[in-house]
Length: 514
Image (cartoon, rainbow, N blue to C red; front, top):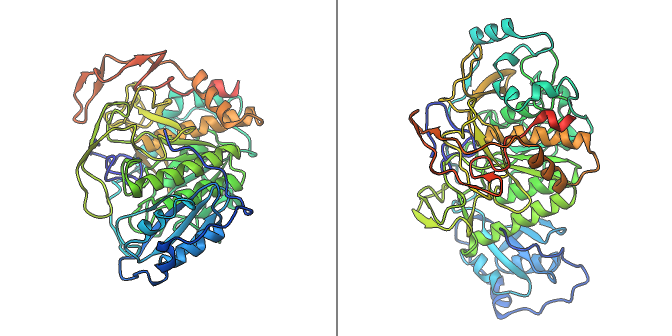
């Protein structure tokens, strides 16, 4: 899930050595007693629908009066098959080889609000996307860190400048968080056999949601054998145990679960898998989800496009449902250094599963998903010196809070002198990554500490506490650019006590446990 910039990364981690460049209203759940709809001329003849096109995946969003039974009939008549129906939110996942599948279903306006393909490449197409190299912790750096570890610290904690930046090291002296709280890592999978994660891993709240249906068989949630280490790195930042091994997480006393949503070999995150992830988290009693990715194949998904607006609708319904079920959703702002509050943004990398088409759009119309959905906590990244990371996207009124994501130009005075974030990687090892992907889990960890201290608090209340307790951070005079030069921070705006770079400020773990 580590994306190489906002367009070529499958997750929001910045590869070493590279510079990276409002939703629709929720409709009520469908009612089983709704009056049946008459067949349109389109649906009456759709039984002979063409099935010669590429096999694509679709989401179909029902009206308040449509039923899953009616949807299934319409989908079959249009040459499709139902994969999964989420009755709670009126979203149906389907497959079809009919090139006009979505167009035909859209004519049934009393049944469907919107219908759209979740991808532009066939289901059988295998994409390859470089995630970016994780810099592995060397034996020499591990020995240096262990030699400088203070009493009570984990062996590698002296290299964790990021914990000290949000006072997590001080918070641990008071409270590590409650095992009754679980953070769901919606990502590329987590290696639950890692010695720093095994004690805090919740198998009963983990699954593989790729394709849109939750698979809870043993180990289904783990990374693919040739896959990404991204989800395991994120999980360690949240909840690596204080067990005398390796690193410490922000909330080392809480549980962590894995909800794998990335495609094999490509680390692409499609709508049907992400919807499944939010629904699974809601039904399994997960309190916080971390979302360090954007939903493919569009870096920004546009509400004025027939296909794309269906994806916005389905994801909006899923995140709102999860929030109503007590889940706080945290998401990374992106690694494109884009101003998400600007009048326009240029994107030359979408769709990223076939041939990209350059476009210029209004970020209020074309959204970074799930980051810009209502209720989702949007997180920007900072480095050791407290500056916005050179790659981090930002935006006044869009970014809620900031957290350490790493910046190779902001070098800390640690034994390893590495400005990236150190965490767990599959196989029992440790490695460095940088990206807003690494900032998000710091916020998810602090949210878990808050939920531990306030078990009856609603997601909106936890979000309010995150902002109220954040360390207010003014716009800096200078920031680093992608080549390591200090430049004027002219893109940072301030209003109502917030900034475009940091939102309400940098999260504070110590205040969360007091």
